[in-house]
Image 1 (cartoon, rainbow, N blue to C red):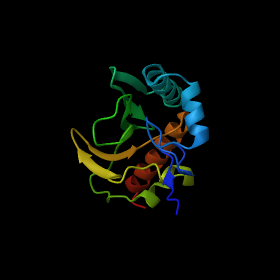
Image 2 (image 1 turned 30 degrees about the vertical axis):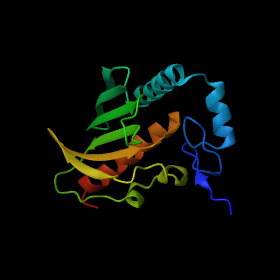
Image 3 (image 1 turned 180 degrees about the vertical axis):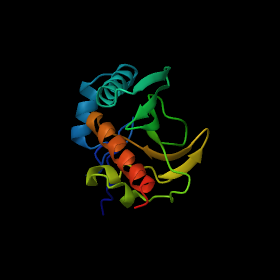
Image 4 (image 1 turned 120 degrees about the horizontal axis):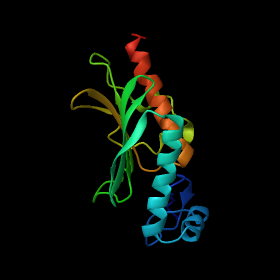
Length: 169
């Protein structure tokens, strides 16, 4: 009996495990065509940064290292932090991490509460969403993978979910 695994990028069933991860054939071909990870990953993260800053002009780069690019600022009147990891920490697959300012009395949300498109639901990390606290209370959601435009969709949906709880709905 063949046991299927899920592609790390598109979540489609696959039977292949590549040396660099579990990818279906179309995703593996695209990754190979884009070049080595040392070139591909920083370029992909820069494209995600550019589209986020274009959609949310209140965001700016606050950290840019070989391991992570971090955006901070405001979007729709709310504080936001976005971490786009180039190198993933050991034993974790959190690559795209969003923090959105969240009301102090708002409840912890579940993945269905975020109203994400179906293709993004399976990409949410297993410990997300959760609440964290630094200088403000954050709604924190991490994803294994997101396409360039999916980063915009994710932040838009998180802002909507946070706003819904500000209004007491």
